[in-house]
Image 1 (cartoon, rainbow, N blue to C red):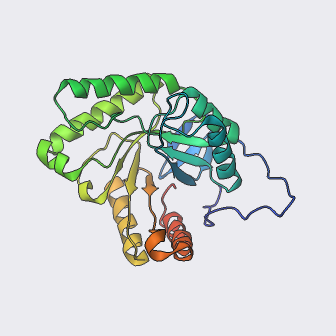
Image 2: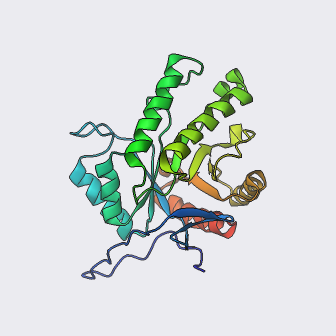
Length: 266
């Protein structure tokens, strides 16, 4: 069994030393207890968020293709193995990730982020998501799909927990039905932690806490909410403008180590 990657990033290569080409894990992505496996081997998610961007020359919400490939290569060289995207990639973007040895967690939620349920727009969301999932179904670079990010608390209060949960369940079923059962998550946040979403394979949260002790305690709470499912930390960070880059780097080292020590899958 592989050990958790406590070091945030791999050490830089010595000058003149050729970086080893990252290898894309192969095989089905599965849940094994509180962790993920790819091809039957434990997969520790070491991810970076990427985007969103102004549309490129092909209308994709990503940088120009040569720049994107350069970014992916640098991520892989730094020890990143997964990229979380806030928009659905095209097949060529997914191909570029695979070529760099990177897995993807694409969001296929409501494209222009309409927050109106019970209207024609809701049906548009379902249709858009289905089209994107079908385009990517079976692609070797897909680790799992995210069907949304941080449902606004006021929206949940307005529509009610049952109605919002129904919407998220529908999005989950769209992915499952069009991908032969790929893993699905929804990225929640503390203001709506009360949403009970047992149909999702992985429990994902964005957490911005600046005290390590409080952070560790909240990770333990997430395990209680998740039950026997894996917990994935989808976002964390510290403002470098206010605190400086050195403080930010120290924060990331300590908090990412805490994430793995507390048993999260990445």
